Image 1 (cartoon, rainbow, N blue to C red):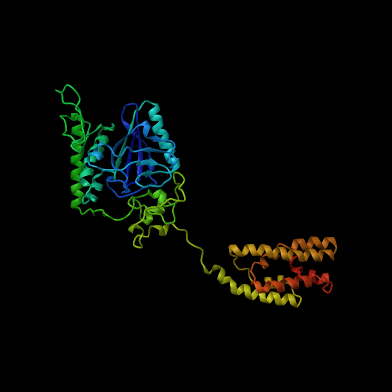
Image 2 (tube, rainbow, N blue to C red):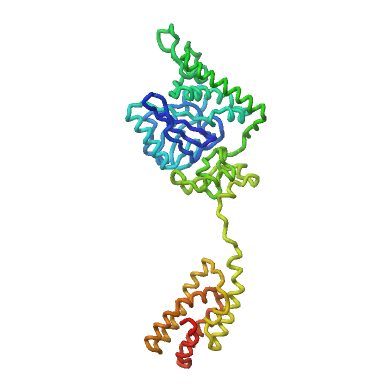
Length: 432
């Protein structure tokens, strides 16, 4: 097993060895959150996620992590220590929360953790973690040519190139405060060279087939980079003040989502993945990247928030409701039914909230047919029950509170003996 991380792309790759001994890509996981800026970690508390080559042993796996599951990246390595860099407990973990770590969802880290654990059970003593600011392509090298971290990135790109041309895990050594990849003892040496990060490099060689393949790739990349620069490839901004990044598949699921320093942060890029399923549960406390990228000039969240319902929708129905309730109340006082008033006007659109009020009023009106049924034969009760469903649309218009009391009094008065059951029946004759 071998793992590669890319900040700008916000991706974690898991590679597994096939039967030929070469590594093949098993799966790519979108990174839920990483913090800091593009560039290596330098000191404790700088929120930087580390970059470079690290080794993960079984002792670095933490099944009791406060962030579900995790493994320690091994920062600082011998190179970092030689430069006086500080920091500790830099992890790849779950919970989608980063303070210098690479954070995944709990579901993702469970899968990655199990792959690492199984590789140890299969006899692998440690797996390599390669952390990069971005995929080390000619285009990215051209875009970031003005970044002060470029000398460091060119150094670790050599290890990237070794893996690209060989599909073998590069052997990593340190000397003279720099990385050395795939070093071997010279033909006339009796023993393997010994490397120390702060000491002078011993005599070593790189196998000819590897050295020639890497040199060929580097020449091609350098030529392509120079061509892109000559064509006016714009330089990436530096010191943006944005804290880290997030893969677009997660940013598209958040109301104020932003990919930060990661790719795909334009509104269109987020809208294209908004309907795709997120690879795991995004916790409610997730903190998406903040900074200029969420300014009005680049409103990334605009395409993410659902369109709100028009605020005037309920208000527009209010005048009609007041008018209808006034005349219907007047009609009840002179002995006319509310159904006649409703039949004379079209049914307006009913917003969600008034439906609750409508259900309550239907219960009140339902008491009227029950009272009338006491004074009429049983077959008439069946007819009145059949007439009840059409009454519901007539009461859809929500009455203002002052009209409620008169309506209640009118209903009670209409059930008294002074109004004959026949008149009540005739008022609803059209609904039979």
